[in-house]
Length: 453
Image 1 (cartoon, rainbow, N blue to C red):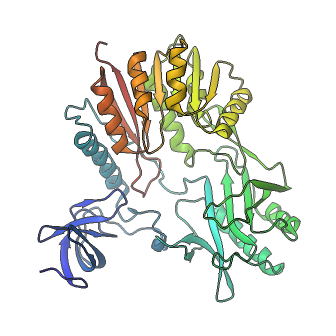
Image 2: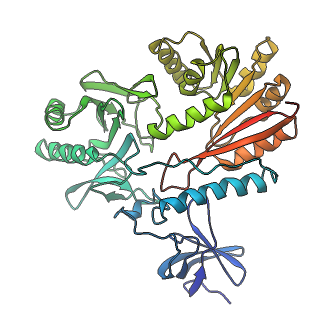
Image 3: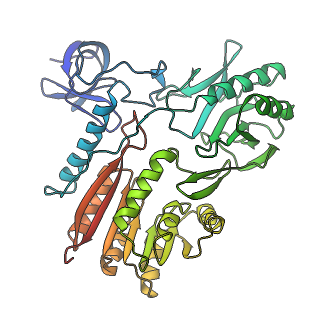
């Protein structure tokens, strides 16, 4: 008979989507944070339910053959769930996750081929954007990351997946706060000035933006901070004060005050340039973004005569990649600000064969088709919930030669591939891409074609 607070030996046989170890005790599933497949561990049951239990990892009795010493010393933040797994094993794990999900949910027993995951040569320092909460503890300023499942700040001096220059930026901001008697924000009292430090870095250009998020309309002696950053940070281009005086978990407010520079930086994906502002969206891992987009372009197999629909196009990054090889591209996205950015990016790069529509994909795509718009190739890059069924239904009616599905969620990908597979399309190739090393996240690009082709 199992009991709460009881200590048991457990073998980890699988991982959840969140990276928790899965084991069995007397047939009951137990979730153990920190366990890896192949580990034999000693765990203390912290919660016992009818159908499952959770356990606290006390000791690794026999480690998994893939277990390594994680580079990160701040494991409490929980951001890199599988950093204790060798990178080679991480990639194997992610491929297996895609395969098993496509089989279990999508019924795709006869997948032509799921390629090995395209990983990174150097799977560290890959994030071009960082968001650091600021607080106080014992009279001292703390800057770092939230502890997993809480809003307690882990005072972190470094991060393996962020650029090292962030460490210098944090120290400069902390010194500026102390010298100018500027307080850190306190969530409970809704008092204090500085809430977050946000950095954005152009990997190709080396441009650096620093955003100070404040619980006040003014930031005292902000010019002194700009001077210190300019004197000590190579590549520093702009300092922006973002005003967020709401009681909210949302990091950025809507008002930006430019303290220094132009309030924006530039970066490239391939030969295309993009303008990055405090509020604009830009892919977090530009190295692997290029890999992902080039794979999507390869699968689209454009000769120059095709019309392409890019559904859920965001700020138009994939659209512009496609437009370099297509006759015409139509991008569809619900967020007006993203469409505005897509149009600006199109003009910025001299691309005249891309057109963008604002609205819900499930409304816009059927309407365009009814108006006579059609596509030879359809690219979809939906949010985690996957494609709306009306979108899939219209794709089936449209009968494009190829469908390229870019997914950030294997489960909804499998569901949507099943629908398309039951309605005249077949999976030709599946290519997972590792956009976020050391996490459970995996991006996947799938090529489908009509079964009559």
